[in-house]
Length: 178
Image (cartoon, rainbow, N blue to C red; front, side, top):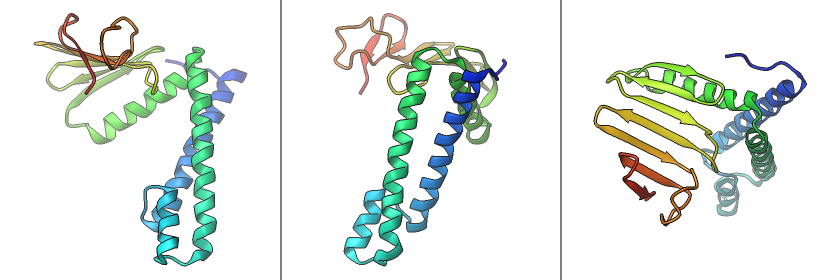
């Protein structure tokens, strides 16, 4: 695996790093008030639970950070949709970090390719992750007794949650996402 260092690769890295920095700042600001969203800061101000100053300024900053993060996410998704590999690899690296830090007791190994990531579990099963963005994804878990795959491939028009669907046990057993 190689991460591009050409001009577009550097742009991708800068965009991704900026989004992560904005998220860090937002989490820090929300943590200051023990809340999960800017709206909760506003509620605390209205109830008199926190002094209006500097809480209102922090509320406005949190709104701005949330908006910036949303715009950066949209930009990153457009880059991934265009096939810009650097950002896809960065997303896989984020998943790998989570697997290593949070699930080391069940993840025996992992491999990152240009278009997918494969997790190997301690029971011998494997999960392949492809296109991990909100609008396009495929999580394929291959087990001894069959498969479970959640994806957005647009070929099951009869499913109420189209294009989102689950293959449960086999390719033929297709279900809507609950």
